[in-house]
Image (cartoon, rainbow, N blue to C red; front, side):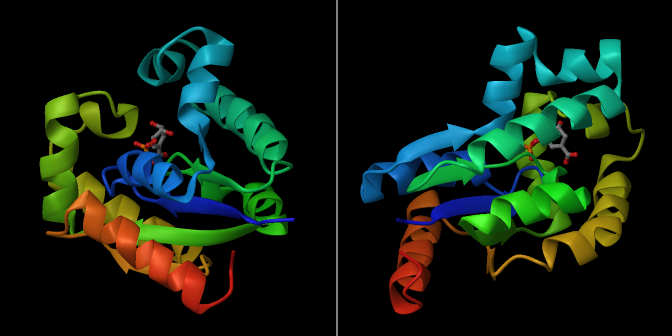
Length: 173
Ligand code: S3P
Protein backbone atom coordinates (compact mmCIF):
# COMPACT_ATOMS: atom_id res chain seq x y z
CA UNK A 1 0.00 0.00 0.00
CA UNK A 2 1.32 3.40 -0.94
CA UNK A 3 0.53 6.58 0.94
CA UNK A 4 -1.14 9.54 -0.70
CA UNK A 5 0.90 12.69 -1.12
CA UNK A 6 -1.37 15.43 0.23
CA UNK A 7 -0.67 19.05 -0.63
CA UNK A 8 -1.97 21.54 1.92
CA UNK A 9 -1.39 25.25 2.43
CA UNK A 10 -2.72 28.69 1.72
CA UNK A 11 -4.41 29.87 -1.49
CA UNK A 12 -1.95 30.71 -4.24
CA UNK A 13 0.87 28.52 -2.98
CA UNK A 14 0.63 26.31 -6.06
CA UNK A 15 -1.05 23.18 -4.68
CA UNK A 16 -3.00 22.38 -7.85
CA UNK A 17 -0.28 23.23 -10.39
CA UNK A 18 2.39 21.41 -8.39
CA UNK A 19 0.02 18.49 -7.77
CA UNK A 20 -0.74 17.97 -11.46
CA UNK A 21 2.94 17.84 -12.42
CA UNK A 22 3.91 15.76 -9.40
CA UNK A 23 1.22 13.19 -10.20
CA UNK A 24 2.36 13.05 -13.82
CA UNK A 25 5.99 12.50 -12.83
CA UNK A 26 5.16 9.84 -10.25
CA UNK A 27 2.49 8.25 -12.44
CA UNK A 28 -0.11 8.68 -9.74
CA UNK A 29 -3.71 9.75 -9.96
CA UNK A 30 -4.29 13.44 -9.26
CA UNK A 31 -7.20 14.49 -7.04
CA UNK A 32 -8.22 18.11 -6.49
CA UNK A 33 -10.77 18.37 -3.67
CA UNK A 34 -12.04 21.79 -4.83
CA UNK A 35 -12.69 20.37 -8.31
CA UNK A 36 -14.62 17.43 -6.84
CA UNK A 37 -16.70 19.85 -4.73
CA UNK A 38 -17.49 21.89 -7.85
CA UNK A 39 -18.49 18.75 -9.77
CA UNK A 40 -20.64 17.46 -6.93
CA UNK A 41 -22.36 20.81 -6.37
CA UNK A 42 -22.44 21.65 -10.09
CA UNK A 43 -21.27 25.15 -9.24
CA UNK A 44 -18.12 27.23 -8.81
CA UNK A 45 -16.59 27.52 -5.34
CA UNK A 46 -17.12 31.29 -5.30
CA UNK A 47 -20.82 30.84 -6.01
CA UNK A 48 -21.21 28.09 -3.42
CA UNK A 49 -19.79 30.52 -0.83
CA UNK A 50 -22.06 33.29 -2.06
CA UNK A 51 -25.29 31.33 -2.29
CA UNK A 52 -24.99 28.69 0.43
CA UNK A 53 -22.31 30.15 2.69
CA UNK A 54 -18.93 29.05 3.99
CA UNK A 55 -20.34 26.60 6.57
CA UNK A 56 -22.10 24.67 3.84
CA UNK A 57 -18.91 24.61 1.76
CA UNK A 58 -16.94 23.29 4.76
CA UNK A 59 -19.47 20.50 5.27
CA UNK A 60 -19.15 19.36 1.65
CA UNK A 61 -15.37 19.72 1.86
CA UNK A 62 -15.31 17.49 4.94
CA UNK A 63 -17.32 14.77 3.19
CA UNK A 64 -15.10 14.86 0.11
CA UNK A 65 -11.93 14.74 2.19
CA UNK A 66 -13.25 11.75 4.13
CA UNK A 67 -13.88 10.00 0.83
CA UNK A 68 -10.56 10.76 -0.90
CA UNK A 69 -8.59 9.92 2.25
CA UNK A 70 -9.54 6.29 1.63
CA UNK A 71 -7.65 6.29 -1.68
CA UNK A 72 -4.09 5.04 -2.07
CA UNK A 73 -1.13 6.13 -4.12
CA UNK A 74 -2.68 9.45 -5.18
CA UNK A 75 -1.54 13.05 -5.19
CA UNK A 76 -4.26 15.06 -3.46
CA UNK A 77 -4.45 18.87 -3.63
CA UNK A 78 -6.69 20.34 -0.91
CA UNK A 79 -8.33 23.75 -0.53
CA UNK A 80 -6.49 26.29 1.60
CA UNK A 81 -8.89 25.90 4.52
CA UNK A 82 -8.93 22.12 4.67
CA UNK A 83 -6.82 21.74 7.81
CA UNK A 84 -8.98 24.10 9.86
CA UNK A 85 -11.12 21.12 10.73
CA UNK A 86 -9.28 18.60 12.89
CA UNK A 87 -11.34 15.79 11.35
CA UNK A 88 -9.94 16.62 7.91
CA UNK A 89 -6.40 16.56 9.25
CA UNK A 90 -6.95 13.16 10.87
CA UNK A 91 -8.56 11.71 7.75
CA UNK A 92 -5.85 12.96 5.41
CA UNK A 93 -3.10 11.84 7.78
CA UNK A 94 -4.46 8.31 8.05
CA UNK A 95 -3.00 7.30 4.72
CA UNK A 96 -1.10 10.34 3.62
CA UNK A 97 2.05 12.34 3.96
CA UNK A 98 1.15 16.01 4.32
CA UNK A 99 3.24 18.56 2.48
CA UNK A 100 2.51 22.21 3.16
CA UNK A 101 3.32 24.71 0.43
CA UNK A 102 3.95 28.27 1.58
CA UNK A 103 4.72 31.58 -0.08
CA UNK A 104 5.20 35.18 1.04
CA UNK A 105 2.02 37.31 1.35
CA UNK A 106 3.22 39.44 -1.58
CA UNK A 107 3.69 36.39 -3.80
CA UNK A 108 0.30 34.99 -2.75
CA UNK A 109 -1.22 38.36 -3.63
CA UNK A 110 0.40 38.35 -7.07
CA UNK A 111 -0.68 34.78 -7.79
CA UNK A 112 -4.29 35.06 -6.62
CA UNK A 113 -5.13 38.58 -7.81
CA UNK A 114 -5.63 37.94 -11.55
CA UNK A 115 -8.00 35.04 -10.95
CA UNK A 116 -10.53 36.88 -8.77
CA UNK A 117 -12.10 33.55 -7.80
CA UNK A 118 -11.10 33.33 -4.14
CA UNK A 119 -14.23 34.07 -2.10
CA UNK A 120 -12.25 34.81 1.05
CA UNK A 121 -10.13 37.44 -0.69
CA UNK A 122 -12.23 38.93 -3.44
CA UNK A 123 -14.42 41.07 -1.23
CA UNK A 124 -11.58 42.40 0.89
CA UNK A 125 -10.72 46.11 0.63
CA UNK A 126 -7.12 45.41 1.57
CA UNK A 127 -6.25 42.01 0.14
CA UNK A 128 -2.64 41.91 1.30
CA UNK A 129 -3.74 42.63 4.90
CA UNK A 130 -6.42 39.92 4.69
CA UNK A 131 -3.82 37.46 3.39
CA UNK A 132 -1.49 38.32 6.29
CA UNK A 133 -4.28 37.98 8.87
CA UNK A 134 -5.48 34.64 7.51
CA UNK A 135 -1.91 33.33 7.32
CA UNK A 136 -1.43 34.20 10.98
CA UNK A 137 -4.70 32.56 12.03
CA UNK A 138 -3.90 29.43 10.04
CA UNK A 139 -0.26 29.04 11.05
CA UNK A 140 -1.02 26.43 13.75
CA UNK A 141 -2.99 24.30 11.31
CA UNK A 142 -0.45 24.41 8.50
CA UNK A 143 2.37 23.65 10.93
CA UNK A 144 0.85 20.21 11.50
CA UNK A 145 2.00 19.11 8.04
CA UNK A 146 4.87 16.64 7.88
CA UNK A 147 6.98 18.81 5.60
CA UNK A 148 6.88 22.44 4.51
CA UNK A 149 8.21 23.90 1.28
CA UNK A 150 8.48 27.61 0.56
CA UNK A 151 7.49 28.15 -3.07
CA UNK A 152 8.29 31.88 -3.21
CA UNK A 153 10.19 32.68 -6.42
CA UNK A 154 10.34 29.01 -7.37
CA UNK A 155 9.15 27.41 -10.57
CA UNK A 156 6.58 24.62 -10.35
CA UNK A 157 9.17 22.11 -11.63
CA UNK A 158 11.59 23.03 -8.83
CA UNK A 159 8.93 22.53 -6.16
CA UNK A 160 7.98 19.17 -7.67
CA UNK A 161 11.64 18.06 -7.58
CA UNK A 162 11.90 19.12 -3.94
CA UNK A 163 8.85 17.06 -3.04
CA UNK A 164 10.16 13.99 -4.88
CA UNK A 165 13.49 14.29 -3.02
CA UNK A 166 11.71 14.55 0.34
CA UNK A 167 9.52 11.54 -0.43
CA UNK A 168 12.46 9.41 -1.54
CA UNK A 169 14.83 10.50 1.22
CA UNK A 170 12.31 9.83 3.97
CA UNK A 171 10.94 6.61 2.54
CA UNK A 172 7.45 8.08 2.31
CA UNK A 173 6.63 6.28 -0.94
C1 S3P B 1 -10.11 28.37 0.63
C2 S3P B 1 -9.24 28.10 -0.40
C3 S3P B 1 -9.71 27.72 -1.74
C4 S3P B 1 -11.11 27.11 -1.70
C5 S3P B 1 -12.02 28.01 -0.95
C6 S3P B 1 -11.59 28.26 0.48
C7 S3P B 1 -9.57 28.75 1.96
O1 S3P B 1 -8.81 26.77 -2.32
O2 S3P B 1 -11.10 25.85 -1.11
O3 S3P B 1 -12.09 29.20 -1.66
O4 S3P B 1 -10.32 28.73 2.94
O5 S3P B 1 -8.37 29.08 2.03
P1 S3P B 1 -7.33 27.15 -2.88
O6 S3P B 1 -6.39 27.06 -1.72
O7 S3P B 1 -7.07 26.08 -3.88
O8 S3P B 1 -7.42 28.50 -3.46
